[in-house]
Image (cartoon, rainbow, N blue to C red; front, side, top):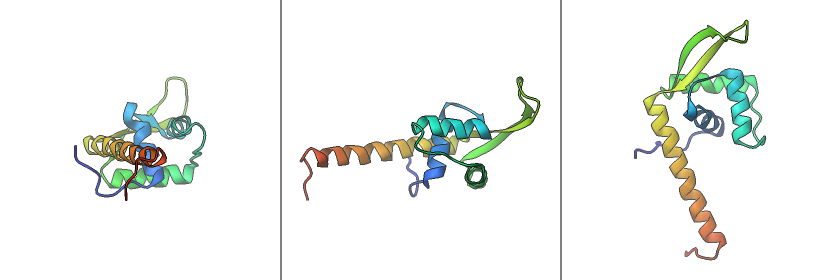
Length: 113
């Protein structure tokens, strides 16, 4: 599987992981990031929308629609991963799993220098 040229910044990582299950609007993304981090990460609007703009510019996500939600009266912009974004998100998961495996091995006394 192709890997990301370098690890994603934390905010970008949280957003692409939150979008793995499908498109979300901004407020739903903030909530999903909080859920995925068990409340440890609280992303504000400035960080969220700045990061979304960088991810769109980088080709990892696209803005899908600007629509009125069924239960809302305000318009919401939705975002989803591009195929490249999905590949990068999965590569980041692999990178994190490898990191955790090495750390666990080291904690168990199995690390060699």
